[in-house]
Image (cartoon, rainbow, N blue to C red):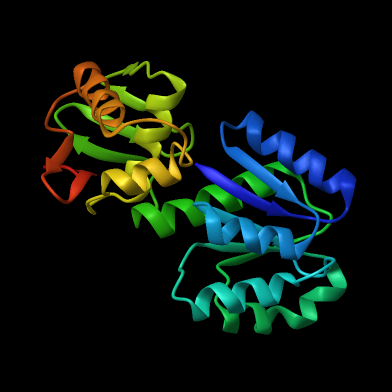
Length: 221
């Protein structure tokens, strides 16, 4: 899953970035709110971690802007103790959680996991049962066949994770090209081949396809 981090304190930014990547997330970090907002407009993220007071557009204004545009991407605000007086503002704007500075790495880990589970999988559990003997572990991002993890290539894993965040929805090929391949020079045939390789390693029924609509993963069926 891809996370955008906005933090203008260099030490915090580097520590959070490295820690989240060690957990298996893809992280893009920014120090300026204007740059972060531009990235949100042009790329797809599954979570925003936003400091409130940063150069350029504030964390509050970023959330106000994306919510007014109808974007429901989950948001966790990073705040100092003095900012907590403004907690109600963040929730009214549409944030999902707060984390106070200073915080332990494990607190960040648990808050990120909880928000992702609630927003994308509507579950308090650590796994999603996909049927056919397959389970998706929310903490590790691994697809399990029985007790054995399915071995995906990095690109196959990105496709799988992206489809999981859209579980139950058809994702058009163009959307995969934009959000997973980031508009790089690949053909529709390349994307179909990647889906085929995922199916070859799992079950053809796990990823449903429909002409003109794209691909989707359904919950247990």
